[in-house]
Length: 106
Image (tube, rainbow, N blue to C red; front, side):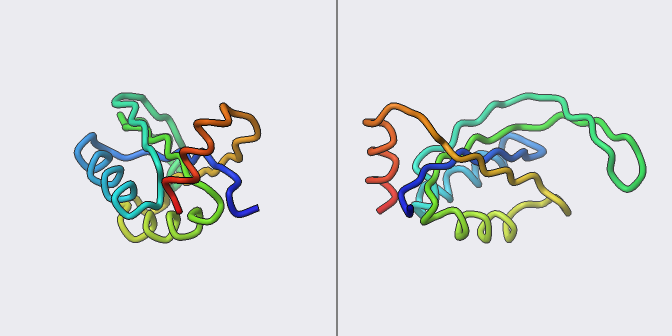
């Protein structure tokens, strides 16, 4: 179903690059909305070492029709070597909100 909705989670290292990416994907209509959570702390293993850093989380609302293009755009623009890109299907939600999301992305 092309109008199935998704919530994509990712992180950026700073607020400026997160905002720039968010604006670009909404302008390109790859996402209907991007919510930015300005501060979180991530602890992860990278290249055999435990790392810790401050990051900015993006919650990107899109649909199946745009998911692949969003991921391609994301890979080209993201500064990390191995960025997080987790797409979760939205199985339930307010019907008027999900309609707005899909109508915007047409």
